[in-house]
Length: 373
Image (cartoon, rainbow, N blue to C red):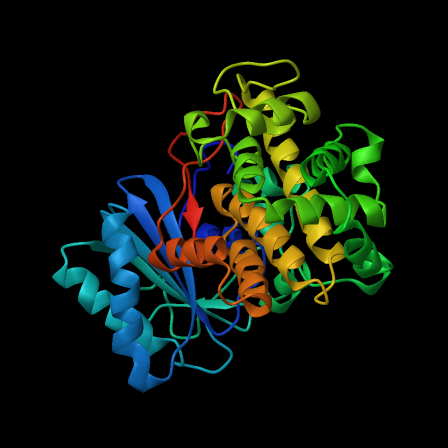
């Protein structure tokens, strides 16, 4: 979120969740951690079979406790009546035993909200029609930033899946340019083009730029330095090879909070007022969209290159609170290269609900909303 959003009740929560998750969930449960009045971790999980409910409840409790939840809101999404009830009631029981207050439990089905725990007039048995998102003030925050939820989890996976027209000639370029010298220098130039703040950076990249950018990530020092540049809150500057840092400074821009120094730099935007915060969020969204386009530009026939690019994109998504995109990118990376260690590490963080600190305009970490996806 770009600013504090006031939610007036369960209907507002239900209306805003698809915008927060990035897609409309189905047959799912969403757990919203609250640290007093601040939203913390947001975790979505598929509805399990009855025999796996206890296991799923246990897996969700660990991240909630680590997040410091003082209370939670539970929302079940179901196509058939009562399919979310075993998991929701199992969570209620465990949360109460852990002295974590359950603020509300809502079930969403066929455009209506139901409650499995309330029989007051506010929650009639026939349910309550969901509000029009346009009538929920918090939704306007997302709409104003050009954000809208995708139709399904499958559409999220499509954000990192290879697109044939983007992949044309990339495999051949990877194979031929893998034999060329000065891989780091060529990768530096490629990433400079990919991240160019002007129109060049927004156009679909040339296949040679895609190849050089992806091939350079085989250099672990360069890959880690690039991630530290894109999301300065992840790795301390001192842990990066000074030669890599020098190359990054010379080649890459600093818009959207990028840059190795947690101080103001040329071209860096430092959020001050509301308008600056919104502009900064738009820039971070632009960065992620460029990385996702790069993921879609590397075919599965280049597995190591695609896994590396997806893992870089996943770090930016996870730090930005986009848990669903993080999962999709990590899943593609590990499908192509099951032993890709950095993707395995990030997968572990996602599974445990361990949030990396977000980027601010000064490159510093602050408290923020996170998601498991």
